[in-house]
Length: 109
Length: 114
Image (cartoon, rainbow over all chains, first blue to last red; front, side, top):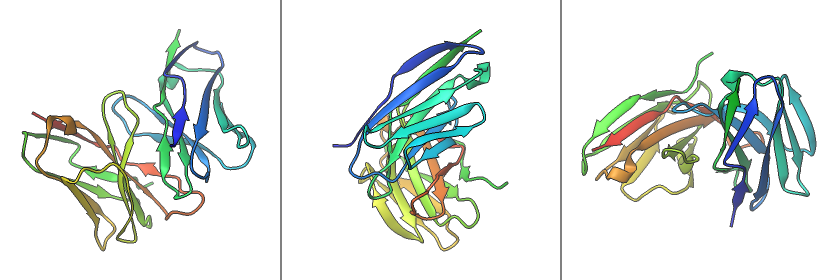
């Protein structure tokens, strides 16, 4: 079966750095997405990785290792507005997005 | 920039009633996806359309049907509503099912079944 695993919840302090991990087992791989979702709102795109390595985009970076079926989202200089759920999703061989359950990130002052 | 539009934003129905949700994709996007998201759950893929044809099917109940029209907007029709159908329904659009098919999400329709 297809499976995406990520931690259910994480807590971090404002101004700090947090890394949210995602491991996956899917039938085929056509890229991995990270989305941010505030409660009751639509997911918004953060990053896309299809090749191994690190993609940096401002305070957010995403890393992929295809051989290990592993990705992480790194958030730096955390702000209170970063409190949200972070969803890892993999595009499988049919280009269908397989979603993780999301990681709820709680930022404390 | 134009975004995905969904209507209505909120909908309250009673059991066994029907509901129709509408989605207007970003201009020039030819693919539409429907997702159902229960409280505290990840989005569950229901169905997708590419160029007005069903392109993929997920966990969509038989009571639900959907279609994409010539102007690329899509409608999700839900019949014999059950309490468990209460959820956020998101529509997303993209420019086809290529390698980089970033999906842009609409604001969602919150359906409450009483």
